[in-house]
Length: 295
Image 1: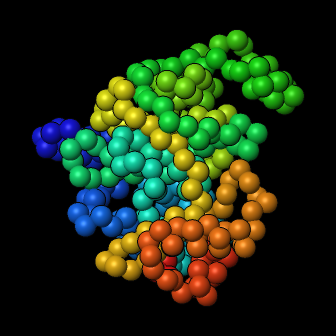
Image 2: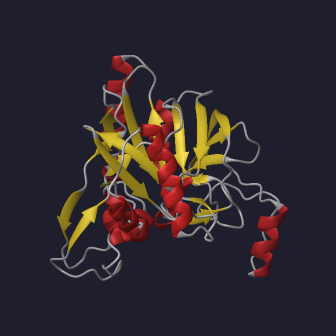
Image 3: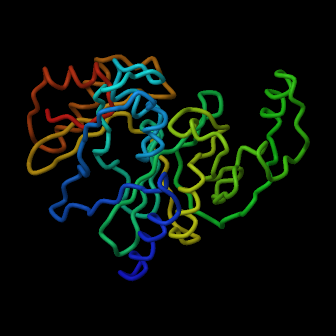
């Protein structure tokens, strides 16, 4: 992406809507892997965590995990919350699109821009997992129809909702107004008519975004862009020679214990040839707030 193309992309981000304002960061030139900063916000009486999350391009689970002692729906006038807007970049290639299902987040590395743009996403439920794969984007589809899988049709039938073979575009269609088809058969990035599902395990395996965000992606992501879907609940990063640990729940394996997580951290740290504060590591692995912490 040439400089003028990248500027155009940012204008698309700003123009689509207030909720479309994605986070865009310059990549560290020294090879560091932590971007952004955690900020704090004082809420008013009408605020909810879901509303704040959508306004600031944060996923629902992200903001709830970052503020575990706050009622998501009645946080209270004057309550101060943390906005989890700092990220350890996933270990996948900084090329094209990277989705880390464990943090409900998509990262886009525009070509030749030295930047990363990031959006919250919804991912597949435990019985319809978003696959950990390498694939590519194929094309954008406006007003997509949805062809339910046999499993999806059975599930809906059990709830008394008999689906047609093909669900046409409209408010009953879970793909929203726009979809980006992937080479992996049956999988899409797509919009939604239920924005609270962004940042949760809600889909049948597809990656769900706010409608404004999928519109932005369709404008700035060329067909054939590489896609890396990873599951990294534990991320280790470096910023200004300081070591950071970001920890999330493993969405698809709740049997992992603290000892196993500590071994994962130890393996990652050994590769960096540095020694962390292991007491602090234990605290971060226990809290699972999804915020990079210095260790």
